[in-house]
Picture 1 (cartoon, chains in turn purple, blue):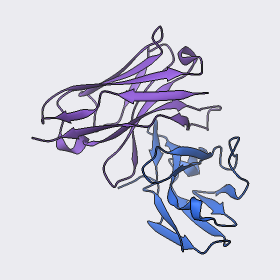
Picture 2 (cartoon, chains in turn cyan, orange):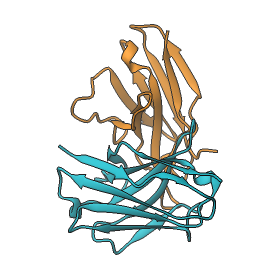
Picture 3 (cartoon, one colour):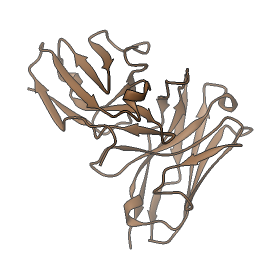
Length: 122
Length: 110
């Protein structure tokens, strides 16, 4: 059974940093691209970042580029999101999600974690 | 403001059929990228409901179906049940090389 378990969320002051983790199990982690998707309270889903299977390629939403860094440790089956210079608008539940892309026109998320809440406030 | 446009809410009585629309543009749905749908029950994580426009993952009831035409897509739910009350999101890919979502639609079962 595929499982994704996020951790590391919490309350942080504006300008602070936080590192999220996502522990994966039930599948060959090193074979899949992975993503972070966030959801502000009462709002919709927003894609944040993705990383390819060996970690050599990353991509970010404009809103977090230069502040967030996605990485992975395939030996530990773990995905990370380092968040620096946090702002109030980064407050959200952060989900890790597995990439389900199957063709050059089909890009989706086939499994999601339960999410971890990040609150940026003084 | 979401790249894909969905109605904020829809409603229907048990047993009825409802549809949720998802409108994009020539840089995403209209460019040939597939549309996918997620169901988010209250207080839970999103769950893949439909992928590749019309395919259902194992375990998803055939009451749920998806279609795509031009720059739009639709999710249809037949035989509406109380447990279908949730938020539904469409998602596609954009020529700006990112995955994009609709703003979400809250389904209320009357």
